[in-house]
Image 1 (cartoon, rainbow, N blue to C red):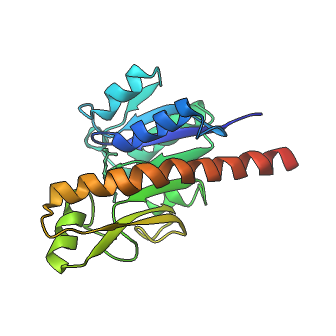
Image 2 (cartoon, protein in one colour):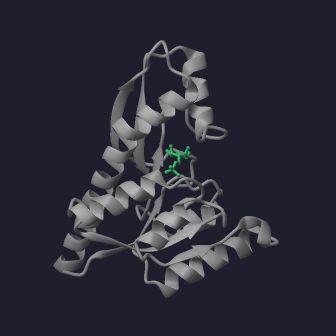
Amino acid sequence: MEKTRIAVFVSGGGTNLQALIDAQISGLLSHGQIVLVISSSPEAFALQRAYKNDIPCEVVSKKEYTSQESFEERILQSLDENAIDLIVLAGFMSILSESFTSRFPKRIINVHPSLIPSFCGKGYYGLRVHQAVLAAGVKITGATVHFVNEIPDGGEIIMQKAVAVRGSDTPEKLQKRVMKQAEWQILPRSVEMVCKEMVRSRTKK
Ligand code: GAR
């Protein structure tokens, strides 16, 4: 079986990348293989996780490019060189334009730390999402894995998992619980599901 070739895009701690690596090691992710990690920052701890697991990495930092177009051109070149089939945005904090995302319909997956359509879209990322959840006083939050299209956090939903908000939560505590109980569970499962489908449709041809 020819596995789906995955590129994971990161910017920070990389705990979701770790969940994917662990899923690959345990066999939960069996129809796909992470063959490339692209980081928007040279300081991202996610890079250490990739090095440790012998996954090739590239740093493509937006501030080193004069335009969005040249930044994305550089990414496209890496994707092409590595024959990437599927992109996973795992805490990737740089914006990708519509001209980029439209090249990969149902081939870009994102994990977002809330139950979409709540607390998503422009300005909602990382800890800010959990701050907004606590400020609104909602009792249930969670995480969503979805396909990426031209609408920020607006693509088709693949999987969601709810997490209870506690009275004693701080944004940091809530973030950790949402990661552990939801993101690290549904991201590997969603990626496996999509990879499996891609393998199946390739072998049908
Ligand atoms: C995760 O909580 C992810 O859902 C979030 O950033 C964090 C990255 O953590 N992504 C977004 O907010 C995207 N809108 P990680 O680097 O440890 O995986």
